[in-house]
Image (tube, rainbow, N blue to C red):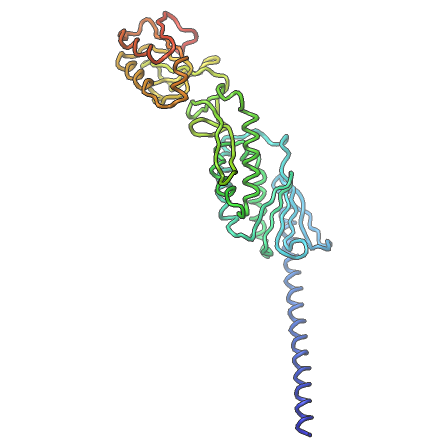
Length: 358
């Protein structure tokens, strides 16, 4: 009997001891959690002060910082609403407040796009665009202010670059396409939205006037392009027929191809015409007229053969409507004149050519 009583006392005592230790461990864990939270809140307050943002600690859903940072209105909740993960909410800038695209910004914007895979390498991160608002979420609770500030910097750079990415047009397509074709990629939502906006922007800017616009790099007209995104999805946009870029172009200029050994510049713009030196720009392009002066019979014949053998269907069709002017003092043979006549609409000799380059 005594043995049974001792056994019962041992069991009860062990239970009390276990519950006591468990309670003590729980108390220590709670204290540690509170200390860590207080430390995080102090760090967040320091980040808000450093970034000149408002720090709010009395919110029931957790502390946050909010305000204008690097020109962007944002709200950062490092513990997430309800305590889960990190959230950053941002506002896209108004379209009317967006300055025109600056050439020097182009490479910086491409660098931002190329950093996407490293910044969003983890599948527990997402970037959602809704109207003029952007929501970034990740499952990780950000504990270091440096990492949080770097995240804020990148997201603000991305939001500031957003309208410029649209202006990049065709050049942005290959950078966005890898994210758009993967449904579960963290950047799928942003990439598909940008592609739609590039479609709308370039269509509004260039549709029905492609033949009036020449790419400054390739000197070819703009045209509609279509890229497949997999399945039934595709993106349409307008850009250079050759390089597909959409923001660096001449508009309303007549392009005149000039064969002139005495012409020093690669091209000269006079009034509404751009005179392009054939001897300095060897690639064929979408020219509207041909002017021959101070060129040898061999050079002209070589040019006529190259144009006659051009396999580009768009240019080949246009050649039949392009006039060719030969200055009267240019010494070329009748055979070469006939070669030109087989390619171009009309070949005429003249004493003078209006607004010819000096």
